[in-house]
Length: 387
Ligand code: SF4
Ligand code: SF4
Image 1 (cartoon, protein in one colour):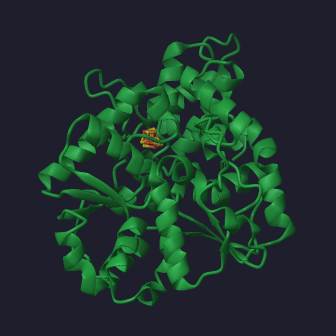
Image 2 (image 1 turned 90 degrees about the horizontal axis):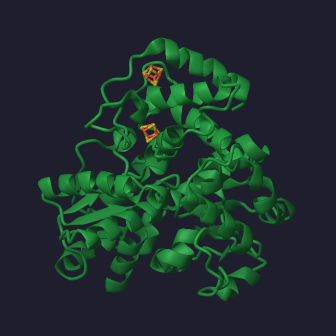
Image 3 (image 1 turned 60 degrees about the vertical axis):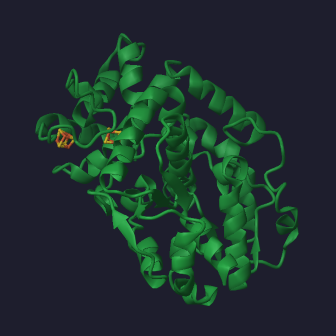
């Protein structure tokens, strides 16, 4: 969205003031109850930054902390009675602070790593080290885009997904010029780097247009579907961009009689009860929450739901660079979710986002919760192994 349009929306927000209590914001400060810790206050900070001729707000530590502690979860936008796209306004504010060189140190490292190594972690091994043959699969017109998290931090997600593709007989390849989707750059205010850092990957797609690109990371899918469209005018008109759950939902029976193995799975590999976590980018951002549930119903997996679900689900706390810049805030939010899991009597969180999984796992480990976390594709692949 253009700055001018966003400024109009900011006025609408300033005149509203209807933010219910805390807007379900992970950044909400219960102690001070400062308005600047949730939606309208953050929007007012962006307004001040845009209208401020003497750069007082651009250089403010508080403005930096308030804007960069937004996970981009979108819960405020979902609740807002005026329909204000709060996350886009906050992304604009972050961009302004980046222009003033007033942004978290932790993000400087992420930016340098993506520039120098094509991933936010600074890893130097090739992206396809575990599946080198897929890069040369020139005949495939379906692409799997695993993304940095599944390549460098939770490789079992990608490996289990490849096993599912194989079982389905899908002829798949990965991009030769695959790099970080760079969604994190947009979400941390570094929009100006997007074009240069994704251009060779996007050119490869433009030169040989695939039938579909399938993602296991909702953040990467959002980058391709929404961020590239708004920032790079790239619409992928002839290519379907699908989360794996959307791709699989009509083909689940081709994986075999998985429901016959559910009891065995729950007695051996996975400790029930299981609870389903809707990732923000997947459920609220892209509206994909029926497909994973349809898959779970098809295999007759018993599972519990959080108190708030689907578009109203609560954030794991880690997105948009909050985990790296404000780890305590991210952890506090994750603990709220884990306490709810405990209250509801579940032992395994099942989800479909590597970032949520990684955050949950690290907070579980640090705080010694008796809770497991698993990706939907891992579960399906475990079931296949039992057939
Ligand atoms: S975020 Fe929505 S509800 Fe809150 S003040 Fe702005 S427009 Fe009103
Ligand atoms: S997007 Fe999420 S973290 Fe950011 S202000 Fe809205 S509710 Fe808070």
